[in-house]
Image (cartoon, rainbow, N blue to C red; front, side):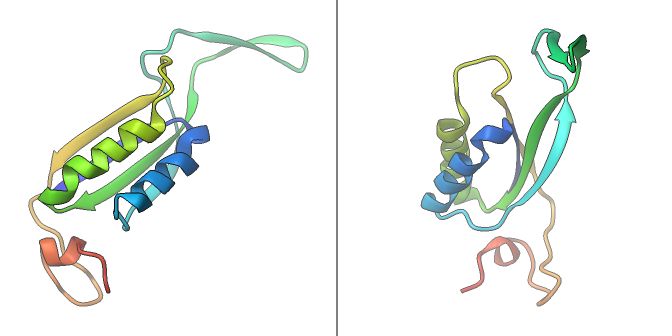
Length: 116
């Protein structure tokens, strides 16, 4: 089992969600976040004043998957989230030691398998 954490541009969220649905990846959590990656400092005009923008708006997706779904999940996110510009984001694939579904007490792969 793996936890896939993807940080993407907010404007690519709908495309990523559609790609994940097509890849049959169903369960996920998302958060609106702010962060700073490899982007150089941006300067924007806000109410007539030049302001140095240090934090960027991003979306963080967290998806727990069994081993067979790792590659399709990562490929779906890569394809849908890519613009080719700096700031597209990152995908982290992390090992998971144990998972429990609270409602049923199911463990591990049974806990990350979509309910039919």
